[in-house]
Length: 114
Length: 114
Image (cartoon, rainbow over all chains, first blue to last red; front, top):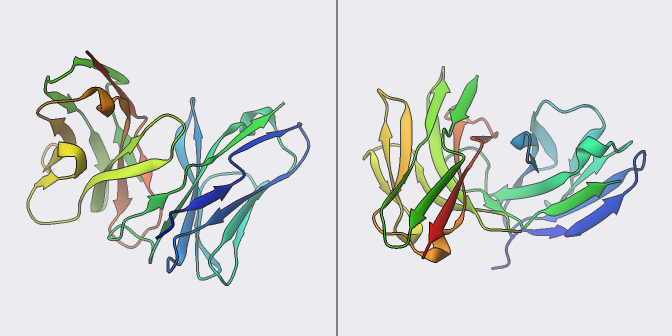
């Protein structure tokens, strides 16, 4: 069974630009969550989608948005990039979300904003 | 609100020695507890989790953790570490009431020396 796939692995963008990151979950998984990892703030929850609906959202500005498609693939978008958005963005998928089922993480997308 | 504290940012240890990585949490509601490992340039991999039942939980790669409700702790242990255990370890919690947000500690870097 293929794991969680995130594309691209690495990305360099300029301040003010926007970026879209993609996450393909494990087949059959309907929940996709996104996390931002930085040296200063650690791992922080961005949002979670289940069956195309956002169920939970973290404390991030409106520049951060996401969506989920009918095949459970998810994208996150960051508009008007700032230097502080440089981070490793991790996607996790699980069958139903919540705590009782394991969340499987992708390798992440390393975003650098210059 | 929930919070997770990993007091040790780095733990150096010699190969074949035992190790304990400490994790304390704070929560006004019941939570599930997890330990994840992150190798360089990789995503997160679940080591073990506590949902209910026996407070001693065994995970992959010879790791185990003990849930102590009175001390709100979930320390990770391994009786004999290997060079390959060098990685970042994250303790995390998630609310039992179907929240979909993992709250992570700041991480502990385990450095195994020969």
